[in-house]
Amino acid sequence: MKKNVLRLLVISVVFLFPFVLQASSEINKGDSILENIQNKIYTAFMNSFEEGNTNDLMEIENELIKIKTNDQITSYWIAYSKYYESIFYLKMRNKKSAKKVINEAIEIVELIDNKNSESYALLANLYSFSTQFADGMLIGTISQKVKNNAEKAIKLDEENLRAWYVLGSNDFYTPEIYGGGKKCEELLLKSISLNEQKIKNSYMPSWGKNDAFSLLVAYYIRKEDYPKAIEYLDKALILYPNDYMLNQYAKQLKK
Image: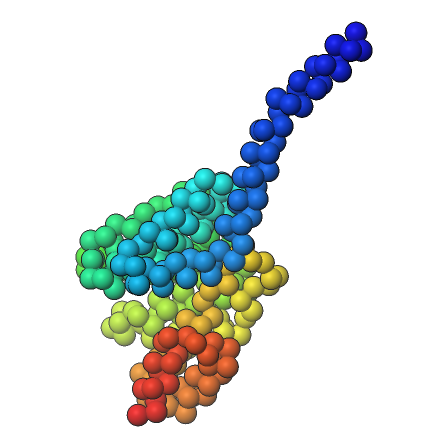
């Protein structure tokens, strides 16, 4: 009897071992793709201009689809990658593809159950980017969605700088005749006062602070308040010396 039980245990171990290895491999693969995922997506985005396609971004998206270790995290980064896909297509003057991909990104985040602050902030940013593809009648509706989602993000986490940045961006780009431009300075200053992450985590987002600085500098340039523009540009360049937009503003202000 003991021999039969031992034999069954051995058979079970031999039979299950390949599946344990496979599961372990999937976990390790997941850890690998999620490690510094934001930087990987941005690097793939930059490579897309050299290669003339979005293959690297799509490869990341496919790897994220495979692992599904956490629906909220993987869905977030798939949508974030598609956001950069859309930017690429827009830069390539392929507005049709840019619109299609950003709408796909929005749908992915909309379908996330029990969204956290980061998901709402990303959704607000995606809607904000999508306004350029909308017909005039829909811009107001989308702008309200930007505001609603950013405010939901802040309600869940008042220290989410990305949510404050998106609110500031929405106000900055809203025409003055529709009430825009009145709150963006306050909102962007709030954004840059916060940490990129509360707790350092390579799986979680840290984007937005450089963009908030850039928009704040643009706001002061628009208002012809050049001392403040230079003040915040100098602060930003200490943190982000290689940022493209900040360096463009540096050239502009030198002139």
